[in-house]
Image (tube, rainbow, N blue to C red):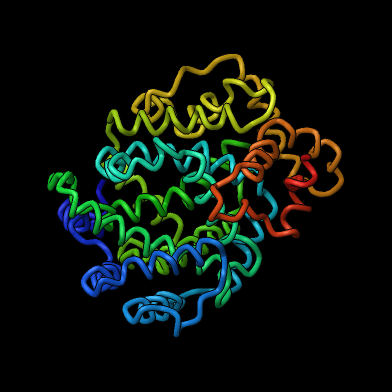
Length: 379
């Protein structure tokens, strides 16, 4: 039964709405001929250099000031608890991101057209994945959503980037009206729930079932991120149960096989096979994606059929159980972490994003608790 808050009529209307504050800021930059100077500033921000308000063009000052404000309903204790969940199951959270959240995004046949047109995932898959993983780590690290923290700054930059992409796509003349607006509210909300609802579901499939309080805290942290990124509050339900209903409503509306979604998924699988060293995990990426997104969605994405690596899922599920049990199982935990999550994180740490971008950064506190080696330690 359709939730009356998110009827087809309402969700159709959300496909025609984008993000007015960010869109207006970007439009002003183009109108005033400030794009080149803004690009230089954005490069500084990408490079994690601080930029003072007086360095910003006027259209961006108001945007950065307004978009940094937390919602009145933000619960700092819940945010801290949600970030603590991420700290405890970090390697599995990254597996859930890469093998569940991202493929779920690719199943939206209309929203994925943005990625196809920008071609970022086809031509530079690793940079996109590393940048997404960096935002997740920054947002969910301890204090990541405090004022001026990396998490808020990342969310602001991604929101502004979305507005710039919308502007350029509209000017390209290649966007079809039947897709709705590029990066519209429904697609933004659909992407957001992959980081919360889909990740929580994936963690359970990996053997780490959260308590009701933990799940709500994790969901709440991402609800706050959604607010910062400009998602309409009507698409940010307060309770996880409602968030799950919204997710299923959106997925039921947008999931469809598309050449673009299948191309993105194939590129993702190829990258995972490339960045994880050795051949022990060959084929495991496809198996994990099928396991985490489900057979029907995997078929839409043309994920290769599961093979013998399915046998490795039991140890990965055990990894989640061991992490749940506490410090007394650290020895087993360390060995099982080698299976996939830790090697995936170390592979991401090693990947270069280009000369103008810093290497992937994991806060020392998380790196030690996850037992992930730095680039220097891998040399």
